[in-house]
Length: 81
Image 1 (cartoon, rainbow, N blue to C red):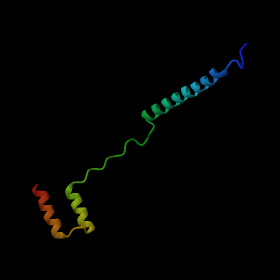
Image 2 (image 1 turned 90 degrees about the vertical axis):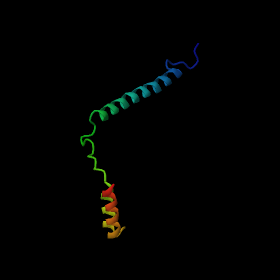
Image 3 (image 1 turned 90 degrees about the horizontal axis):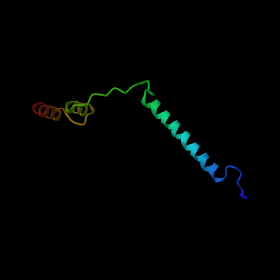
Image 4 (image 1 turned 120 degrees about the vertical axis):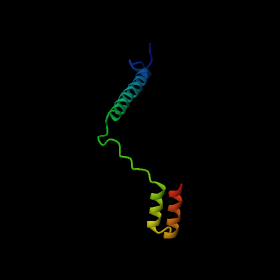
């Protein structure tokens, strides 16, 4: 006589969790494949050119962080090097 055995028992519970994990992995794999093969129609964003030292110096002068004499001195140092 099998006490409480109705055909599933604890094995059925484990099988249910196993099926959830199986389908979860299948769905995750599909999502990864779709994103990898063109999920974005925008493409990659264009890269901005990197600022040179002279560009940064001009910005600092335009913001008023340095005066004209200091700007000219640093510009000469940059162009000499």
